[in-house]
Length: 179
Figure (cartoon, rainbow, N blue to C red):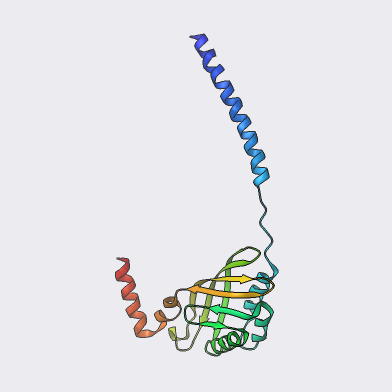
């Protein structure tokens, strides 16, 4: 009985040694493959700062982050060029009482980024003028300035659910679909 215990311990020793060696090499590999998070491109910082300051009186800031041939798309519109984008934002800001973007997360590489945000806005004809929150994401493509900006968000959450009669119908449809 004693000798079989020795045999078992002899069998386990190489396994333990192999495991220890494997663990040591795994630590070495993890050190080699360990990466630090890349620095966020400056254009993304500029983009976030611009949206924190953007309003009907600061539309000139758009030129600081967008290229002259910008393509901007959201669920309602597609506009091309700086002039069309400026007109789009002028119209947008003329029709809202307030708007704010809370940046939730940014995932960026050297050429593109996804910016996750929560927009809070109020409009006198929607939700009785009370604030409306919309979750969304912007996909940006850039080099020195942003050349493509595409927004993804729930148009129902932003608009349709805020219209008195239509909002009730949409709420009923959602309730039926989720049951």
